Length: 63
Length: 290
Image 1 (cartoon, rainbow over the protein chains, first blue to last red):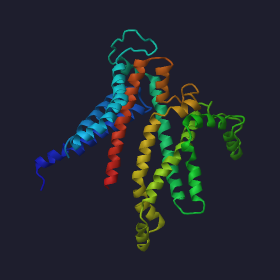
Image 2: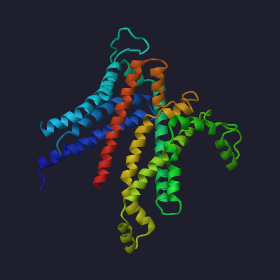
Image 3: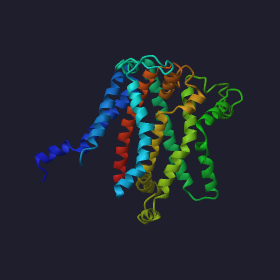
Image 4: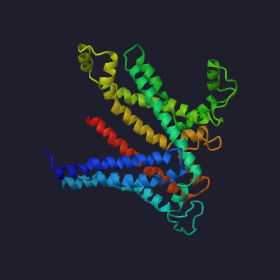
Protein backbone atom coordinates (compact mmCIF):
# COMPACT_ATOMS: atom_id res chain seq x y z
CA UNK A 1 0.00 0.00 0.00
CA UNK A 2 1.28 3.48 -0.85
CA UNK A 3 2.00 5.76 2.08
CA UNK A 4 1.39 9.52 2.08
CA UNK A 5 5.16 9.94 1.73
CA UNK A 6 5.20 7.73 -1.40
CA UNK A 7 2.35 9.67 -2.95
CA UNK A 8 4.16 12.93 -2.23
CA UNK A 9 7.26 11.56 -3.94
CA UNK A 10 5.18 10.52 -6.99
CA UNK A 11 3.69 13.98 -7.35
CA UNK A 12 7.19 15.44 -7.45
CA UNK A 13 8.62 12.50 -9.39
CA UNK A 14 10.52 12.87 -12.63
CA UNK A 15 7.58 11.98 -14.84
CA UNK A 16 5.22 14.49 -13.21
CA UNK A 17 7.80 17.25 -13.32
CA UNK A 18 8.50 16.47 -16.99
CA UNK A 19 4.78 16.72 -17.70
CA UNK A 20 4.56 20.09 -15.94
CA UNK A 21 7.60 21.37 -17.90
CA UNK A 22 6.07 20.07 -21.16
CA UNK A 23 2.82 21.85 -20.36
CA UNK A 24 4.68 25.14 -19.79
CA UNK A 25 6.58 24.73 -23.10
CA UNK A 26 3.36 23.87 -24.97
CA UNK A 27 1.63 26.91 -23.52
CA UNK A 28 4.63 29.08 -24.44
CA UNK A 29 4.74 27.81 -28.04
CA UNK A 30 1.00 28.45 -28.40
CA UNK A 31 1.43 31.97 -26.96
CA UNK A 32 4.35 32.53 -29.36
CA UNK A 33 2.37 31.74 -32.51
CA UNK A 34 -1.23 32.62 -31.61
CA UNK A 35 -2.97 35.34 -33.66
CA UNK A 36 -5.07 36.85 -30.83
CA UNK A 37 -2.97 39.11 -28.59
CA UNK A 38 0.33 40.92 -28.93
CA UNK A 39 0.59 41.10 -25.13
CA UNK A 40 0.35 37.31 -24.83
CA UNK A 41 2.98 36.99 -27.59
CA UNK A 42 5.36 39.32 -25.76
CA UNK A 43 5.33 37.07 -22.67
CA UNK A 44 5.62 33.79 -24.58
CA UNK A 45 9.40 33.43 -24.63
CA UNK A 46 9.62 33.50 -20.82
CA UNK A 47 7.38 30.42 -20.71
CA UNK A 48 9.29 28.60 -23.46
CA UNK A 49 12.70 29.34 -21.93
CA UNK A 50 11.67 28.43 -18.39
CA UNK A 51 9.88 25.28 -19.58
CA UNK A 52 12.80 24.12 -21.74
CA UNK A 53 15.40 24.65 -19.01
CA UNK A 54 13.12 22.95 -16.46
CA UNK A 55 12.57 20.02 -18.85
CA UNK A 56 16.31 19.55 -19.45
CA UNK A 57 17.08 19.70 -15.72
CA UNK A 58 14.18 17.42 -14.70
CA UNK A 59 14.92 14.81 -17.38
CA UNK A 60 18.28 14.20 -15.68
CA UNK A 61 16.61 13.31 -12.37
CA UNK A 62 16.67 9.59 -11.44
CA UNK A 63 13.50 7.59 -12.33
CA UNK B 1 46.91 1.35 -23.75
CA UNK B 2 43.56 0.60 -22.09
CA UNK B 3 40.27 0.20 -24.02
CA UNK B 4 38.96 3.38 -22.41
CA UNK B 5 41.96 5.43 -23.61
CA UNK B 6 41.61 3.93 -27.09
CA UNK B 7 37.90 4.86 -27.16
CA UNK B 8 38.74 8.43 -26.13
CA UNK B 9 41.49 8.64 -28.75
CA UNK B 10 39.14 7.60 -31.54
CA UNK B 11 36.24 9.84 -30.50
CA UNK B 12 38.24 12.94 -29.50
CA UNK B 13 38.73 14.33 -33.05
CA UNK B 14 34.97 14.13 -33.67
CA UNK B 15 34.19 15.76 -30.32
CA UNK B 16 36.64 18.61 -31.02
CA UNK B 17 35.19 19.08 -34.52
CA UNK B 18 31.62 19.14 -33.19
CA UNK B 19 32.57 21.61 -30.46
CA UNK B 20 34.19 23.82 -33.08
CA UNK B 21 31.43 23.75 -35.71
CA UNK B 22 28.33 23.44 -33.47
CA UNK B 23 28.90 24.57 -29.89
CA UNK B 24 31.24 27.50 -30.52
CA UNK B 25 28.93 29.25 -33.08
CA UNK B 26 25.99 28.67 -30.73
CA UNK B 27 27.75 30.32 -27.78
CA UNK B 28 29.01 33.11 -30.06
CA UNK B 29 25.45 33.74 -31.34
CA UNK B 30 24.09 33.93 -27.77
CA UNK B 31 26.86 36.43 -26.93
CA UNK B 32 26.17 38.55 -30.06
CA UNK B 33 22.46 38.67 -29.22
CA UNK B 34 23.34 40.91 -26.24
CA UNK B 35 25.47 43.31 -28.32
CA UNK B 36 25.03 45.94 -31.04
CA UNK B 37 27.41 44.08 -33.38
CA UNK B 38 26.97 44.62 -37.13
CA UNK B 39 28.82 42.17 -39.38
CA UNK B 40 29.35 44.82 -42.11
CA UNK B 41 31.05 47.24 -39.72
CA UNK B 42 34.19 45.49 -38.68
CA UNK B 43 36.59 47.20 -36.34
CA UNK B 44 33.83 49.13 -34.57
CA UNK B 45 33.82 48.50 -30.84
CA UNK B 46 31.12 46.03 -29.77
CA UNK B 47 28.81 47.50 -27.11
CA UNK B 48 26.76 45.45 -24.64
CA UNK B 49 23.03 46.24 -25.04
CA UNK B 50 21.58 43.68 -22.63
CA UNK B 51 18.09 42.40 -23.43
CA UNK B 52 17.32 45.24 -25.88
CA UNK B 53 16.92 43.02 -28.98
CA UNK B 54 14.86 40.42 -27.14
CA UNK B 55 12.48 43.16 -25.93
CA UNK B 56 12.29 44.63 -29.43
CA UNK B 57 11.52 41.29 -31.10
CA UNK B 58 8.96 40.27 -28.50
CA UNK B 59 7.01 43.54 -28.77
CA UNK B 60 7.26 43.98 -32.56
CA UNK B 61 3.93 43.48 -34.36
CA UNK B 62 5.67 42.68 -37.67
CA UNK B 63 7.62 39.81 -36.12
CA UNK B 64 4.41 38.59 -34.51
CA UNK B 65 2.76 38.55 -37.98
CA UNK B 66 5.76 36.64 -39.38
CA UNK B 67 5.31 34.03 -36.67
CA UNK B 68 1.61 33.75 -37.47
CA UNK B 69 2.54 33.18 -41.13
CA UNK B 70 4.98 30.48 -39.96
CA UNK B 71 2.30 28.86 -37.78
CA UNK B 72 -0.18 28.84 -40.71
CA UNK B 73 2.42 27.30 -43.02
CA UNK B 74 3.51 24.77 -40.38
CA UNK B 75 0.01 23.62 -39.44
CA UNK B 76 -1.36 23.11 -42.95
CA UNK B 77 1.77 21.53 -44.46
CA UNK B 78 2.02 19.03 -41.58
CA UNK B 79 -1.72 18.29 -41.77
CA UNK B 80 -1.76 17.66 -45.54
CA UNK B 81 1.54 15.78 -45.57
CA UNK B 82 0.48 13.45 -42.74
CA UNK B 83 -2.93 12.79 -44.29
CA UNK B 84 -1.79 12.33 -47.89
CA UNK B 85 1.40 10.49 -46.85
CA UNK B 86 -0.63 7.92 -44.89
CA UNK B 87 -3.18 7.47 -47.72
CA UNK B 88 -0.41 7.03 -50.32
CA UNK B 89 1.42 4.55 -48.09
CA UNK B 90 -1.76 2.49 -47.64
CA UNK B 91 -2.28 2.46 -51.42
CA UNK B 92 1.32 1.61 -52.29
CA UNK B 93 1.48 -1.10 -49.63
CA UNK B 94 -0.86 -3.18 -51.79
CA UNK B 95 0.87 -5.54 -54.20
CA UNK B 96 -0.13 -4.66 -57.75
CA UNK B 97 1.60 -4.65 -61.12
CA UNK B 98 4.09 -1.77 -61.35
CA UNK B 99 3.79 -0.64 -57.71
CA UNK B 100 7.58 -0.43 -57.40
CA UNK B 101 7.84 1.89 -60.43
CA UNK B 102 4.98 3.99 -59.06
CA UNK B 103 6.71 4.27 -55.65
CA UNK B 104 9.89 5.52 -57.38
CA UNK B 105 7.90 8.13 -59.36
CA UNK B 106 6.04 9.31 -56.24
CA UNK B 107 9.32 9.69 -54.33
CA UNK B 108 10.98 11.83 -57.05
CA UNK B 109 9.92 15.34 -55.77
CA UNK B 110 11.77 14.96 -52.45
CA UNK B 111 14.99 14.21 -54.30
CA UNK B 112 15.01 17.63 -55.98
CA UNK B 113 16.75 20.66 -54.54
CA UNK B 114 14.31 23.11 -52.83
CA UNK B 115 15.75 26.02 -54.82
CA UNK B 116 15.13 24.14 -58.09
CA UNK B 117 11.59 23.29 -56.95
CA UNK B 118 11.02 26.98 -56.15
CA UNK B 119 12.03 28.10 -59.64
CA UNK B 120 10.16 25.22 -61.26
CA UNK B 121 6.88 26.05 -59.45
CA UNK B 122 7.27 29.75 -60.22
CA UNK B 123 6.77 28.79 -63.88
CA UNK B 124 3.92 26.43 -63.01
CA UNK B 125 2.15 29.27 -61.12
CA UNK B 126 2.75 31.76 -63.96
CA UNK B 127 -0.70 33.42 -64.50
CA UNK B 128 -0.76 33.44 -68.33
CA UNK B 129 1.22 30.38 -69.39
CA UNK B 130 1.48 28.37 -66.15
CA UNK B 131 0.20 24.81 -65.97
CA UNK B 132 -1.48 25.34 -62.59
CA UNK B 133 -3.87 28.04 -63.85
CA UNK B 134 -4.73 25.92 -66.92
CA UNK B 135 -5.62 22.90 -64.76
CA UNK B 136 -7.65 24.96 -62.27
CA UNK B 137 -9.48 26.77 -65.09
CA UNK B 138 -10.20 23.45 -66.79
CA UNK B 139 -11.96 22.27 -63.61
CA UNK B 140 -13.78 25.57 -63.03
CA UNK B 141 -13.31 28.78 -64.97
CA UNK B 142 -11.93 31.34 -62.51
CA UNK B 143 -10.49 33.51 -65.29
CA UNK B 144 -7.02 34.95 -64.98
CA UNK B 145 -5.60 34.80 -61.45
CA UNK B 146 -2.18 34.74 -59.85
CA UNK B 147 -1.21 32.44 -57.01
CA UNK B 148 2.06 34.09 -55.99
CA UNK B 149 0.95 37.71 -56.41
CA UNK B 150 -2.35 37.40 -54.56
CA UNK B 151 -2.37 38.22 -50.83
CA UNK B 152 -4.90 35.52 -49.92
CA UNK B 153 -3.57 32.84 -52.30
CA UNK B 154 0.19 33.27 -51.78
CA UNK B 155 0.28 31.48 -48.36
CA UNK B 156 -1.53 28.53 -49.99
CA UNK B 157 0.86 28.52 -52.94
CA UNK B 158 3.81 27.73 -50.65
CA UNK B 159 1.75 25.14 -48.75
CA UNK B 160 0.90 23.34 -52.03
CA UNK B 161 4.54 23.22 -53.14
CA UNK B 162 5.88 22.02 -49.79
CA UNK B 163 3.15 19.37 -49.61
CA UNK B 164 3.97 18.24 -53.16
CA UNK B 165 7.64 18.01 -52.32
CA UNK B 166 7.57 16.37 -48.88
CA UNK B 167 4.48 14.12 -48.83
CA UNK B 168 6.63 11.31 -50.33
CA UNK B 169 8.92 11.50 -47.28
CA UNK B 170 5.99 10.97 -44.89
CA UNK B 171 4.73 8.23 -47.21
CA UNK B 172 8.08 6.41 -47.06
CA UNK B 173 8.11 6.55 -43.25
CA UNK B 174 4.52 5.22 -43.08
CA UNK B 175 5.36 2.53 -45.64
CA UNK B 176 8.23 1.37 -43.38
CA UNK B 177 5.71 1.10 -40.53
CA UNK B 178 3.20 -0.81 -42.67
CA UNK B 179 5.82 -3.27 -43.91
CA UNK B 180 6.83 -4.03 -40.28
CA UNK B 181 3.35 -5.35 -39.37
CA UNK B 182 3.43 -9.17 -39.35
CA UNK B 183 0.76 -10.90 -41.48
CA UNK B 184 -0.34 -13.20 -38.66
CA UNK B 185 -1.97 -10.23 -36.87
CA UNK B 186 -4.34 -9.71 -39.81
CA UNK B 187 -4.88 -13.46 -40.11
CA UNK B 188 -5.80 -13.68 -36.41
CA UNK B 189 -8.13 -10.66 -36.82
CA UNK B 190 -9.86 -12.34 -39.77
CA UNK B 191 -10.33 -15.52 -37.74
CA UNK B 192 -12.00 -13.33 -35.09
CA UNK B 193 -14.19 -11.86 -37.89
CA UNK B 194 -12.85 -8.34 -37.48
CA UNK B 195 -13.98 -6.01 -40.28
CA UNK B 196 -11.44 -4.18 -42.49
CA UNK B 197 -12.18 -0.98 -40.58
CA UNK B 198 -11.56 -2.68 -37.21
CA UNK B 199 -8.30 -4.13 -38.56
CA UNK B 200 -7.25 -0.64 -39.63
CA UNK B 201 -8.13 0.97 -36.27
CA UNK B 202 -6.72 -1.77 -34.00
CA UNK B 203 -3.73 -3.10 -36.00
CA UNK B 204 -2.64 -0.81 -38.83
CA UNK B 205 -3.01 2.62 -37.19
CA UNK B 206 -1.27 1.81 -33.83
CA UNK B 207 1.65 0.21 -35.73
CA UNK B 208 2.07 3.13 -38.13
CA UNK B 209 1.53 5.91 -35.58
CA UNK B 210 5.12 6.01 -34.14
CA UNK B 211 6.51 6.22 -37.69
CA UNK B 212 3.99 8.90 -38.66
CA UNK B 213 4.78 10.90 -35.51
CA UNK B 214 8.51 10.69 -36.21
CA UNK B 215 7.89 11.95 -39.76
CA UNK B 216 5.74 14.79 -38.38
CA UNK B 217 8.49 15.71 -35.88
CA UNK B 218 11.15 15.84 -38.60
CA UNK B 219 8.91 17.79 -41.00
CA UNK B 220 7.80 20.11 -38.18
CA UNK B 221 11.38 21.06 -37.31
CA UNK B 222 12.29 21.45 -41.00
CA UNK B 223 9.24 23.58 -41.81
CA UNK B 224 9.70 25.78 -38.75
CA UNK B 225 13.01 26.86 -40.26
CA UNK B 226 11.81 26.67 -43.88
CA UNK B 227 13.76 29.13 -45.99
CA UNK B 228 15.10 28.12 -49.43
CA UNK B 229 11.89 27.03 -51.12
CA UNK B 230 9.79 30.00 -49.94
CA UNK B 231 12.59 32.48 -50.57
CA UNK B 232 12.88 31.27 -54.16
CA UNK B 233 9.15 31.01 -54.78
CA UNK B 234 7.69 34.18 -53.24
CA UNK B 235 10.66 35.89 -51.55
CA UNK B 236 8.35 36.55 -48.58
CA UNK B 237 5.86 38.51 -50.69
CA UNK B 238 3.47 39.93 -51.71
CA UNK B 239 4.32 42.53 -49.05
CA UNK B 240 5.33 40.33 -46.14
CA UNK B 241 2.41 37.90 -46.29
CA UNK B 242 4.65 34.83 -46.80
CA UNK B 243 7.60 36.21 -44.84
CA UNK B 244 8.24 33.26 -42.56
CA UNK B 245 10.41 33.61 -39.44
CA UNK B 246 13.53 32.37 -41.25
CA UNK B 247 13.06 34.86 -44.12
CA UNK B 248 12.66 37.71 -41.60
CA UNK B 249 15.86 36.47 -39.96
CA UNK B 250 17.76 36.39 -43.25
CA UNK B 251 16.58 39.92 -44.15
CA UNK B 252 17.63 41.27 -40.76
CA UNK B 253 21.00 39.49 -40.84
CA UNK B 254 22.13 39.88 -44.47
CA UNK B 255 20.10 42.76 -45.96
CA UNK B 256 19.90 45.14 -42.98
CA UNK B 257 23.06 43.78 -41.34
CA UNK B 258 21.52 43.87 -37.85
CA UNK B 259 23.67 40.99 -36.58
CA UNK B 260 22.90 41.48 -32.86
CA UNK B 261 19.16 41.67 -33.50
CA UNK B 262 19.15 38.65 -35.83
CA UNK B 263 21.26 36.65 -33.34
CA UNK B 264 18.63 37.32 -30.66
CA UNK B 265 15.87 36.20 -33.04
CA UNK B 266 17.86 33.07 -33.93
CA UNK B 267 18.26 32.25 -30.22
CA UNK B 268 14.50 32.67 -29.67
CA UNK B 269 13.70 30.35 -32.60
CA UNK B 270 16.31 27.82 -31.44
CA UNK B 271 14.90 27.63 -27.90
CA UNK B 272 11.37 27.29 -29.32
CA UNK B 273 12.32 24.37 -31.58
CA UNK B 274 14.31 22.76 -28.75
CA UNK B 275 11.37 23.04 -26.33
CA UNK B 276 8.77 21.80 -28.83
CA UNK B 277 11.11 18.98 -29.91
CA UNK B 278 11.50 17.85 -26.26
CA UNK B 279 7.74 17.53 -25.79
CA UNK B 280 7.39 15.67 -29.04
CA UNK B 281 10.18 13.17 -28.28
CA UNK B 282 8.58 12.52 -24.88
CA UNK B 283 5.23 11.81 -26.59
CA UNK B 284 6.94 9.57 -29.12
CA UNK B 285 8.66 7.55 -26.37
CA UNK B 286 5.34 7.13 -24.53
CA UNK B 287 3.75 5.86 -27.72
CA UNK B 288 6.60 3.40 -28.29
CA UNK B 289 6.25 2.08 -24.70
CA UNK B 290 2.55 1.35 -25.38
